[in-house]
Image 1 (cartoon, rainbow, N blue to C red):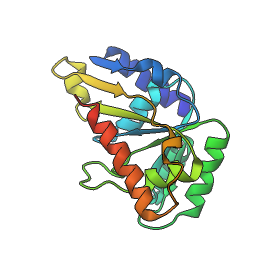
Image 2: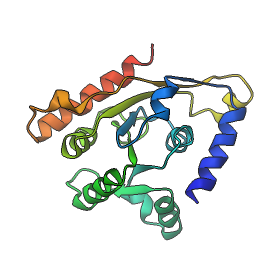
Image 3: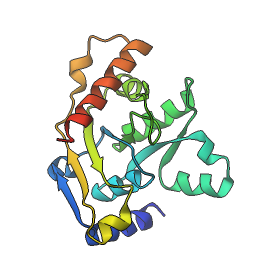
Length: 192
């Protein structure tokens, strides 16, 4: 199932008007956290279609309440996360995927159109000790506009944020938030 959806989005992306800046960093991304701004439900499969290997994604646990949707998301490598609390099961699954060499897609905002940055990406980065690849996405919320050439789908892939620079930080909620804010700043800098 994962490969079928990835193939569909690869075809879709070929016919879209798009630009990928820093593609070589995506091509070489493995065993890291890939962090991007979140403007559309299309963001995860679009970024996934640009990456050669398998990646996992985080998704709010509410999406898994309907069995058919939960089964589909599970096959798409989505890990359910209970928001607003410590989710040990999600941490364990993330750790397993990263130990298997996969990368993990995380959106620091948590949800689309969020106004605050959640500390989760900071927690995953510090707990798992993985480098972070920032990605800025533009116009993924207008597939039709990108297909007919009115808009330009754009991905800007930044330089890795090395986890070593946070080695002196303790594992506290404040430090998780600090790392998450830092990551989102680096993503927003890619806009220009």
